[in-house]
Each structure stands twice: as C-alpha cells, then as structure tokens.
Image (tube, rainbow, N blue to C red; front, side, top):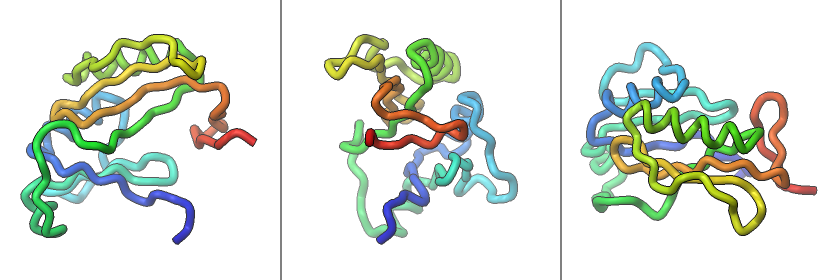
Length: 140
C-alpha cells in the first residue's frame, strides 16, 4: 500500500444537503454524478458523499448514530484562518463544537460539525507546514 488516502467518503443521510454545506465551505462539486453520490476534489484526494443506506449495503456494515471515532482536519496557514474556517462552517449551516483556543502543543485549533455531525478540526500548527498548494508535511 502506498502512503496516501485517495477518497474520504461520508455516508450521508441527505447527500444534497451535505453537498450544499461543502459548497458553502468553498469546495467545488464535480458535475455529472447525480444525487446518489457527490464528489469534491481536495488537492490530491477526493471527498465523496454517498447515501448512507447505499454505503451500508455496499460495505455490508450498519453504521452507528452520533459522532464517529474518525474525524477530519483542515490545517491552515495562520491562526486567523482557523477562526475564519470555523465562522464559515457556522454560516454554512454547521455547528461549532469547540471554539478556537490555544492547544497544549502550542498551536491554535477548534472543532466544527457539518449538518450531519461529521466532525472536523480546524488547526494551525507551525510544525506541520503547508506548501503553496496546501499539501501538509510532517516535521523533518
């Protein structure tokens, strides 16, 4: 296995509602796939929104309710950008789970949930630099 993640899929109750949320967050929906699955290009990976009942049938797994044990992170270039991302999420219909604050590791971070309670962390960590295209790197 190569060290990469190709597609991050959210099993959505309402694909269209989540697609509108992520569009309001600045992501561009890829045209031509319809309302059963939606795709958004995320740099070198893809965010997919797949109808939950179809994802359960496809994977043969019944998903539990509530917040899962996996959450996504959006790292930023500045502390101010963390605040802006949290505000944008709230304006787009998400919910602030934890307001931005100083982290024990010295950075600035907070959490928001999308309209179906999928958890995202917004964080600025100088030890994990972003290149000009937004790709993150582990410290040397």
